[in-house]
Length: 404
Image (cartoon, rainbow, N blue to C red; front, side, top):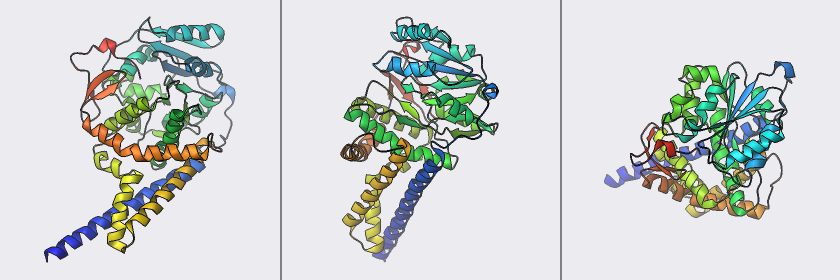
C-alpha cells in the first residue's frame, strides 16, 4: 500500500514536470514566431515629418568609458525633426561633463542641455539623477535611455511609430552591439537567447517584462501615476512604471528594433553581478519566480524532465537529457539569428562556448541571488523588501547614490 502510494505520487509529480517542460517549449516557439513577425518589420504607413510629435530624451550619466562619446553622439545624429537631449550628472566632478559639453559644441543645431546635481526623491540613484531633467522637459513624449545605449539614425522614429493612441509605453528589447572580446560575446549571447526568449514571449502574451534601458512613454500618463519621482523608492523602476501605465488601460509594446548596449566594460565578473542583482529584484517583485526561475533553465529543467521521462515512459534519462539539451541549443541559435537579423557576428565555436557557459553557470547565478540579503548597485548596498521597494542602510548617504 505504501509503495503504491509513493509510486502514484512519483507518477503525478513526474507528469507535472513533463507538462512544465512542454510549456517551456511553447515559450520557445512563441518567442521565435513573435521575433520573426515583429522584429525589424517594415513600418507602414510612413508618418509625415510634420505630424511627428516632439520627444524629450533623458540621458542620466555617471562616469565615462571608452565608448561613451561615440554612444552619446548617436543621439545627436537622429533622423528626427523635433527632439531635445537632456543630459544629467550627479555632481560637477563627473568626467562625463566634458564629453557632453564637447558634443554640444560639435552639434550646435541640436537642442541639448546638461543638468548637474541630484534631486533626491528616494534610494534609486537613476531616478534622483533624472528628476530635474524630467521636470524641465518641454515635450509630452519622454525617452529614458541608459548611459551605454547607442542608437541607429532611425531608432527614435521607429520608437515613435510604435506609440499608437492606445499605447502608453514603448520598450526596446535589450540586446548588445557587437564588440571585441569573449566577455562581450558572452553578454551578447545572453541577451540574444535567454533574455530575448523571455522578453519576446512575455510581450507576445501581454505580460510585463519591462526593462528600462531604452523606453518611450507618455508623460501625461506617468504624471497621473505620480510622475517620475514616485518611482524613486524602487530599484526596478522600469517594471513599476510599466505596471502603472498598464493599470490606466494603456498597452506596453516592443519597438521593432532592440536597444544596443555598447558599454566599454565587458567584464564577465561585472556582468554576473548585474545578473545576480536582476534576479534578486525579480524575485522580490514576483515571489513565484523563486520556483519558476530555476526550473526555467535548460540544465535544471533537463535533469528534472529526464527523471520524469524515465518514470513515465521508461526511457534512458541520459539520452533524453542530451536530446533536450541539443534541441534547446538549436532553438537558442535560431532565436539569436532572428535577434541579430543576420549571420553570427562571431564564429559558431565562440557562440557554442558562450552559450554553454551561460547555461552551465545559471544555477550559480540563481543560488548567489538567494544567498545574498542585500542588493549591490554601483558600489552601494541596498536592503531589498518584498514588493520591490528598497532602502539605503543608515550608514549610507543618499547623496552618494549614483545612477546605474
